Length: 221
Image (cartoon, rainbow, N blue to C red; front, side):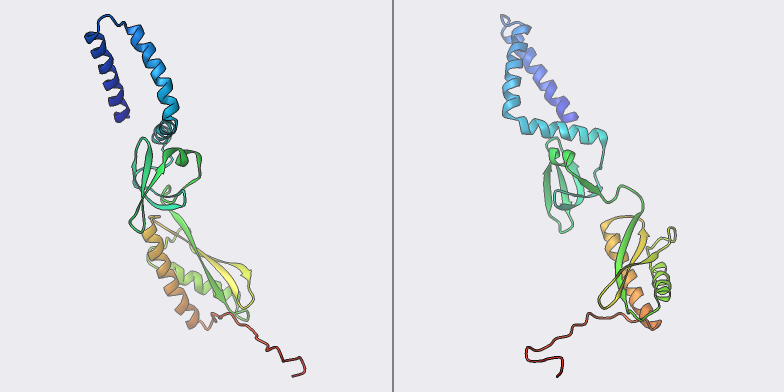
């Protein structure tokens, strides 16, 4: 808004200077010239004006703020600046992505840090012959003891799929704050606790198995 206001001030100052330097030119003439020029500039810089309007709407509606971690346009990172034309995002591998405001305003944007808490999930496989209830109990207890996992809501393990060689369970847990660094660190702690806990309880973590038959083998042999 400050940049736009300074632009209007410069334009107004130019009109006043022109009126003083050329007394024969009236204010109506200046505004008519300004109107024709504005139409020409509007057609020439249509994309720039669209991005500027989208930038103003983003600043007013505030779907995300500077410092939020977002996923937009195939890029994921932290919002560094919201300019009139574009928004700059610093990716997690320390690169800068400049995304036009029109794309951000009209396309989908996922804000990972919009709320205080964030739910994560990891998938764990246990043996088909193991007790599913016992596996759930061991996994949930191990996840509860991981640093950074919230006690409320508590972690939960739910059967997601009966796989070819394992029963697959999705482990859900919540963290705070919901930043990318916390996601990686807490997920690492949960998995580092779940594996030895399952092994200590005698619950198998099976590997995929495959039966290979040579071309000259038959059922009889």
